[in-house]
Image (tube, rainbow, N blue to C red; front, top):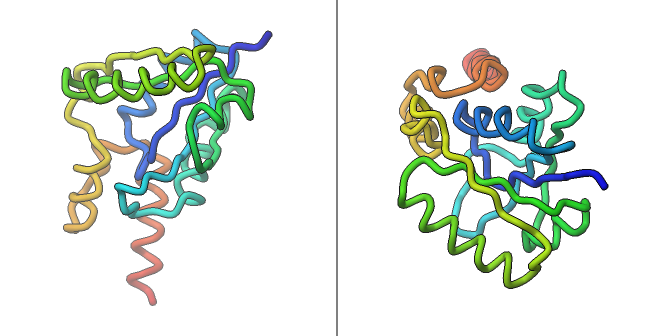
Length: 164
């Protein structure tokens, strides 16, 4: 049986911290689905299609990693793709407290789906999509926090907006 893992999140945008977690998790699984979920508590800056395109671009050379968009309960989506694992990245203790609450709820909904926590590399502890969005909204350079594919895409988008 294939070990399929879901990495759910908003990825608005995907950061170097997310990429670090994915690259470090891939040896543990046969396949990772990086899935963009809708979160009623968040107003995304980028469309789900744009975020999925970034994921596909970043990992285009690794057939074990794919992007997806889903709605509804994470455990329901896990079952629909045959994932028995959820991976979550942890930067700080506060992340763990929040993520453990979600993991406990998911376990109650489906005890056959296990959540695995990976701590991020220390150099990525300050990288958060919320901070990146704030930098972008204020015209700053967020490239130190972003994969090249995202930076390139944002530069193209700015060039189109400037030329219009």
